[in-house]
Length: 138
Image 1 (cartoon, one colour):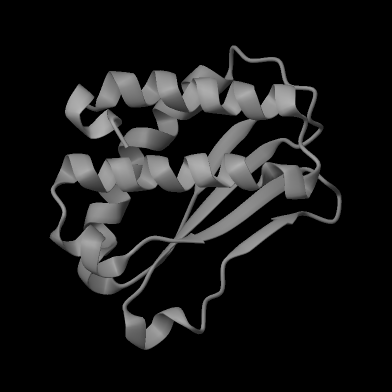
Image 2: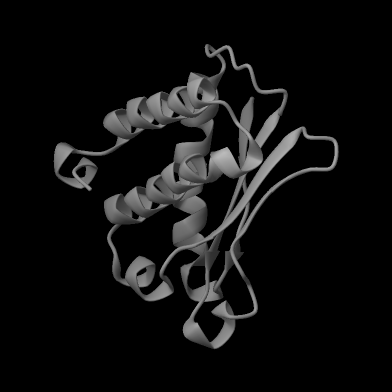
């Protein structure tokens, strides 16, 4: 299993989003390497939607599995205004929150409880490495 991130991002926060995901994604992928999943999917995709109110209605949240079942795709909203005014640690926390929310949505894609817990464990481990305790309490 590999995490892959992209985004539907407003230009004024694109760089901050890129920095946060470029820090988080490789560490999550490193942690995922040591986990045995029952899941046949090979890719866990998060596409944060960080757009202002002007554009957000055109980008609904999506939770789906690819036609071959190998990709778990999550397009999830993150508040543009909050992200824009947050510091780097809080922006990473917002990305972690979206990743955790994607795990919460996995039952819709028939991902086993065991695998969901393994995803949560990986996220908790990486979050503990990257973020101070004050930003982990959410």
